[in-house]
Amino acid sequence: MLLQPYLLTVAAVATAIPTAMNTQTDPALPVEPLRYHTHSPGGLFRPITFGFVTPRMCSGILEERHRILNLVPRSRLAEQVVLFGRYDPQQSAERFQALLRPFLIDSAKLQMA
Image (cartoon, rainbow, N blue to C red; front, top):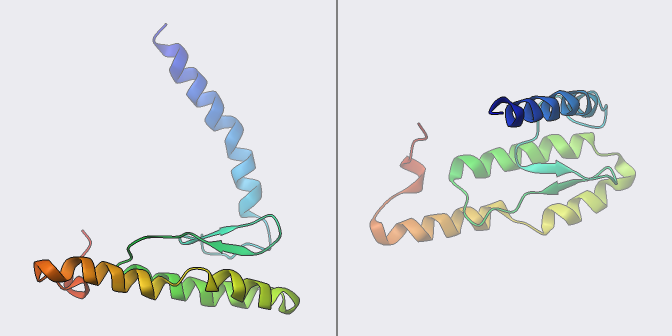
């Protein structure tokens, strides 16, 4: 009886693998996996909204946006820019820095393990 939940989990993973593999071969998706944006059904990329962003994350988000803008068809570029305008990662990075400032911590010096 203890194996039954495990077998259900294995079955769920086995059925999800072909779906995940199909989405990876979609030519509209970038070669590198997205970390900070999701691919919407309309073909545009929605930013994942973070309340606080480290400087490293902020630069990663901006780099990813640059890659996305190179992928989006010119006819949809204005729509993509509007979606990006709804979330400013630099403001989130400034909020993160402001949160750390009372503790005299500089977020630029933080290292991720």
